[in-house]
Image (cartoon, rainbow, N blue to C red; front, side, top):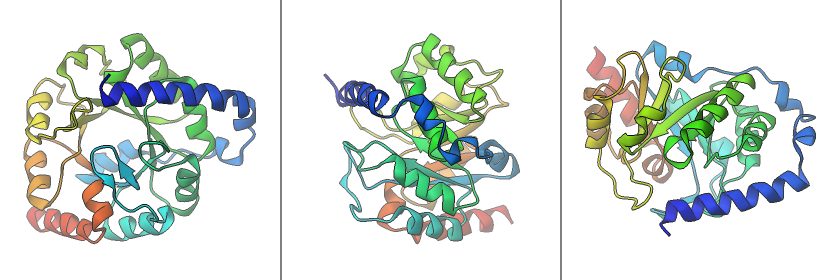
Length: 260
């Protein structure tokens, strides 16, 4: 069993536990469940932008910043020019929680993305109840039917979806008439190897009118400019920012200089 399948199997077990202890009806009673959605898509219609990610650890990087504060980190990101905040909510493998996203959502004015291994509609209700504006849907871990069902339900809850792909074979599972925010993961979640050129190869096979976000492996402004040259409209950056949050200034300032 590869690491991705291990994570998905563990997620499935956790979901069943949470359903019993915190049913959907209970989630719907939380005040944030009715909160207005802040749009990630609108952010990327304006200009190239960066979704800055909060995570304490990962299977590929190990511990990054175990005691990092999500709100403090989010403020640093916003002050440095991030257009969205991604929050890992998986606890076992990434050290995250739904309370992290709740704290960030209440504190910031820009869109907040719940990043997790979403395989069940219940997780969409959780995202809504804890203040997320958008969710990550990983096309590689669900069937075409399940992907469309999750996307439709998320849209019904006014949650935007960043639909992530790695394997080119899943492109045919996407409905580009409605799925307009597409993430290309440069990391193979089965082996954790990273190749920025993956964005270049996959983006050629996508419609010109979708907004492509390049994810994983971006370490410096040269990497950022590379994926931008491939046609990406944005980037999701996690580990390199968690290790040095000031680096986002470098990314954003370099982009502004190049744009002049």
